[in-house]
Image 1 (cartoon, rainbow, N blue to C red):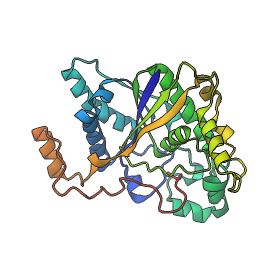
Image 2 (cartoon, one colour; image 1 turned 120 degrees about the vertical axis):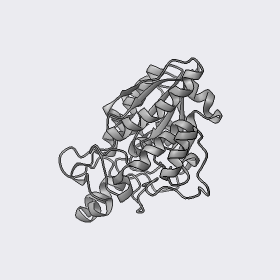
Image 3 (cartoon, one colour; image 1 turned 60 degrees about the vertical axis):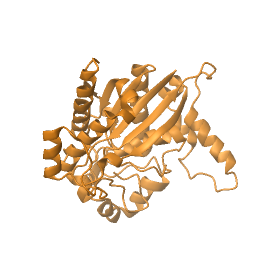
Length: 309
């Protein structure tokens, strides 16, 4: 049995554009983010994704408004296509476990400012100690985030039950889903980019001969570790066994990435004229010369610390 997840990061916010870390602060989409979400919904309605999108029966989003609004705009476009095919309309449900990392006292500042204020903690939290937490109330480690995100994802897979679900979440959560599929423990980067409103597709597969309680992510990490035995061992706290949460072991099966970071539909700045033309004509062509990427489209930090959101 195979279950597919179409996973989308929320559209751009003003804080993405200026480099402020949001965490659990409820920052809404900006104008570009609204446009990105609409375009992603339109792309999922394109023949390239027709079969996949038509199979979606469940939509789950983080309860933060930037994710909820993105999900609503995507689903609005999907429902227009589904209506023409006589398919039931989709509705959005929310799950707080799909929120971004809680960044404690670092929420609302740039990563550069956070690293300057607590340089040793910044390095430990984002690179060498996945159990480290940002300063202040609520600060969350990568191990803690990975646990809640994968618990939510296993619930989505169980609910979709061999079908297809749409999940709208945040950059840090996408990193955890990539870790799950690639066997990369918290504390190590997957090197997979996470553009705003890009389309990612992952699959969970349970074969008839799958062993009960199998944790594929840890198995993949162990195999990688064995293949690279000549390299230095992982730093403390990076044991691949951390990938095997109770919920994942109970679910079993294997995880794989089918598509990642597809964002060509977001080329070109969302000018007022383009939006008005699309609304009036119902067409969704790329703007003329649309090679430019909207500012803030991908807010991967310019530093080596690529888990900071």
